[in-house]
Structure formats: C-alpha cells, structure tokens
Image (cartoon, rainbow, N blue to C red):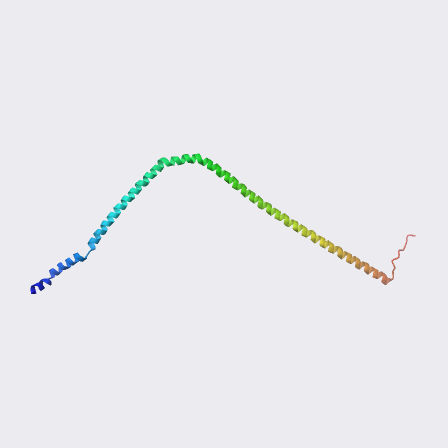
Length: 168
C-alpha cells in the first residue's frame, strides 16, 4: 500500500494526470481548428459567389453594350424629335395660360382701380355739391340778415323807401 501511495503521489505521475486532464477538458485547440476551417470554407464559398456574380454582371453589361445601346439610340432618334415637338407645344400652351392669367390679373387690377376712382369722384362731387349748398345757404342767410339790418336801420332813421326823382 505504501508503494501505491508513493506511486500515487509521484511528481511525474502528477504531470501525466495534469496532461491527461488538459487533453480531456481543454477544447481550445479543437475549437480554434474548427473555427479556422469554417472561416476558410465561408471565405472560399463567398469568393466563388462573388466571382460568379461578377461574371454574370459582365455578361449583362456586354449584352447591353452590344445590343441595347444601339437599339436605344435608334429609338431615341425616331421618337425624340416628336417628343421635343410635343414639349415645345406644351411649353407654348403653358406660356399662353400664364400670359392670360397675368392679363386677367392686370385687367382686374385696372377695373378695381377704375371703380375706386369712380367712387372717389362721386364722393368728391357730392362733397362739392354739399359745400355749394352750404355756401348758398350761408349766403342766403347773410343776405337775409343784411336786409333785416338795413330795414331796421331805415326804420330807426325813419327813412321811408321813397323813390326820389332827381332827373329834372
């Protein structure tokens, strides 16, 4: 038993047990290897997909360059002249509408100003007539006052309004 006990506590044996324990429970090397493998696989597949997509794009661009550009130029030459004409007609119509609106606004403004001046003229004429009536009334009142004054003066001086004829 002593020998078993000594063997059990042998430092070399302790190293072996630590080594076995490390191998059994330390998974870092395995995980690192698997991680590197998965990363390599992902990068290679990704590169292959990207290369495939680039070739597909290159084929599409080449096809467009060879066939579609010429077709687009021909169609543009055929239809752009008509389109330009239609745009010019539309632009002229828009300009005519804008000019009509501006002339209508100008006419409305002028009509409003004429109406305002007409009202001002009517007010001016009414004011002048009222002042003329007031002046005539004042004149008539003053004339009546002067008549009354001279009548009273004649009565006070006992002068009779007799017509004397000095033409002999």
